Length: 70
Image 1 (cartoon, rainbow, N blue to C red):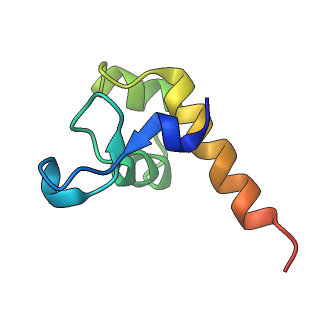
Image 2 (spheres, rainbow, N blue to C red):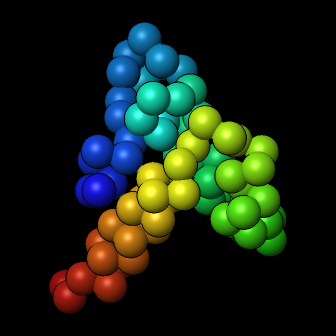
C-alpha cells in the first residue's frame, strides 16, 4: 500500500486536510501522538478506524522522503 492509497485529501473532509483514507482522522494526529511518546498501538487504539497498514505506509513514505539523497 502506498502512502497515497493510505491517505486522501478531500475539500469536503476537514477542510482538505490529509486524512487516513476512509476516515476523518488527520494524518497529522499520528505524528502528534508519536511526538508525545505514544506507540503506534496507542494511536490505533484511540483511532480504531485507521488500519495498521495505513500507519506503516505513511511512516515508510515519510522515511523514504527524509532519507532521499539531495
